[in-house]
Length: 201
Length: 201
DNA sequence: CAACAATGTTTACGTTGTCAACATTACAAT
DNA sequence: ATTGTAATGTTGACAACGTAAACATTGTTG
Image (cartoon, rainbow over all chains, first blue to last red):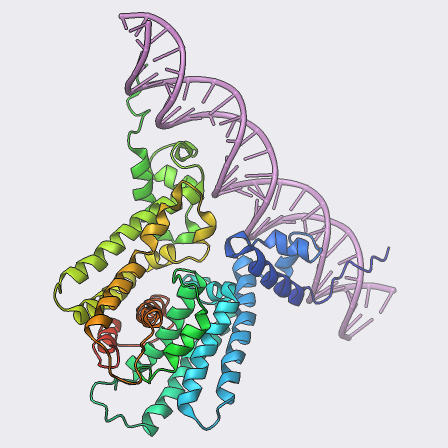
């Protein structure tokens, strides 16, 4: 007998989509293989035809989230094609904004056990993962070469400068999104003040 | 018949101690109630006499980790009783160092679902949680009043300055401890360069 | 059309969090 | 000292979970 709903067709992308939604709504620790399967209207072991295990599915979801994030950063840079200083500031602001608006993505992209879940097949995630690093790095290299700092006290070590820039925006994003930094005003405006001050670059 | 090992006596603190160890060794997602119980040589439901559920135990462990962390920061400050600028720099360096040396603590103290687990009994954790914030805040208030910055471009908004200082060291700690910032040299030396540059304060 | 790969289902097992019922011990009141 | 009760431990059960094995259905390719 023909059961037209037997083959779900592109269940794989459906699992990623519903998985991301589930993570957003219920959080990382309430995420389960069986719930995603149910959300897709499929038996609880069907996902195993597309992902070898739970980690593999989460990695795939992470990859999708990373693409979104990286696109955001790239857009920010493209907005100022000829002004490197603005590129860096705008990129930093976008970095914070993205995670403030999508708190679950922050946990997904920067959980410290991520590397433990990688194998030969899904390690492509690392390339995307370091993309923000690469972007910061390249932009700052150009900034430094343009702007031979004669300022005696400024950071001259390239790696230190990259770590400082990236660390600053990352830390701000975390503290805001975990609500550890308590403040009654507008967080993003505060972020703007920091990034557009002369102290920062 | 008298079985002298029936009552474990201070099982509670033993659970916290072994729990912290387990978290350190096997990570947050491999932590289980039953493993901790086994580590204490006790049946798998014994912990429920001391903690109403898994979250409660983890909260207690978190509290202990926070105390350690806060003590470290306080020590750093005490090392420079009369030099506020050094206090801030030293505190920042200690912040990074602590989490680089204890990566699991970072996940424990700053997991974004922490607040979801709180109830009326265990919410005391929040007071300790904001202690670093308070420390940064107070120190920076004193710094600002001493150091009326006539520097036109510097950050004058108190909240912005606190967020920037805290965010910077927190971000650096995260990026190093998740190994997202790839660098072949000494991370802590790099951190030192950043914090002791004139750009930072 | 026949064989096979891809994809989905059912069943089963071990691990986990947690509840309920019970056992043992400590301790306070008589 | 005895007794009642609270504190603390154990055993057994259950549902949710990850995942492997065996099987069913469908699409595809010769």
